[in-house]
Length: 152
Image (cartoon, rainbow, N blue to C red):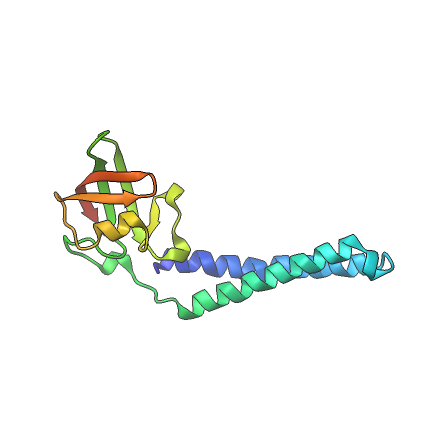
């Protein structure tokens, strides 16, 4: 994963541990004061939130422990691989797309980052500038021309 993606996961983990966990514990404490726990909806909702938050914390800790950070700025070359920022032109519509190929946990298509396991990324791996690729996406086959490969 990229250093930026690792930082996002670390920040999410810290927020869940230092903000969400104490907030949920406070909700549980307040709900306990309302009497019989067996019929206390606030208590059960807070316990459910606690369970979900603790599960998310465990998942983030696991991802961070197994993460291998790759400094994309030190990569180079003409061949597309993990970390590359690729500019594509749709051969049907001439619409330009810019994608950075990143690890699954940090993928965010709205911000131009696609997972290495996505159909587009798999089609791009080991290709070079000037080549055409056909992507079998869920919406049907699309053809793109690779116009730029960058490392940033």
